Length: 120
Image (cartoon, rainbow, N blue to C red):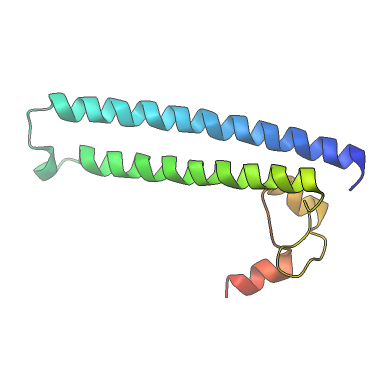
């Protein structure tokens, strides 16, 4: 990979990491607010026919935060591959992953044919 592409992907991964870290911060604040609401709530929200429960909202937010944490791990792994020279190579077959795919999904570890086979 030439230096210009390497620099582009380093910046892309840094920006992606900042965005995911921001989302984690937002999710954490939402969870804290829900937890606080639940602690101070005297109503029986578990049987309220008017909408979702605080527990359901908390579970949803926690799941999204966990997905974001997994995305951070994928970003770190992509950064490691960029440093060691294996970024952009399919982990299954070793072929080059198209640059266009990496620009859209810089954490991609599989080329399109291998990703398609995995999804079957």
